[in-house]
Length: 79
Image (tube, one colour):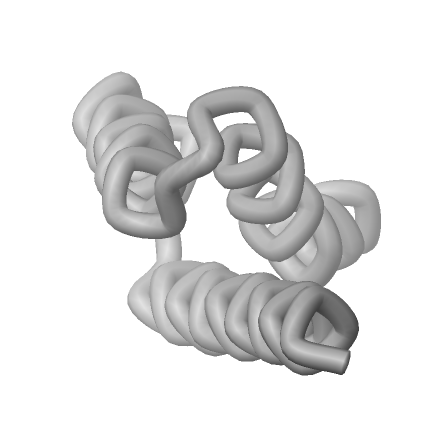
């Protein structure tokens, strides 16, 4: 159970960063990550509602990190 909690905490944020860096679009990265979460819930890998809440929070943190990275890139290119 602890491995599922740890993966729910870290994996959505890391996957969001990964897909955003590969596709160069945070919308596409977000949609791909959400689709993976939906498929894993449909297949039965997510049994409890609080696991979904943890994954949603991790996804939100991943989106925040992506926004911060893009903001730094824009600030760097302006200077």
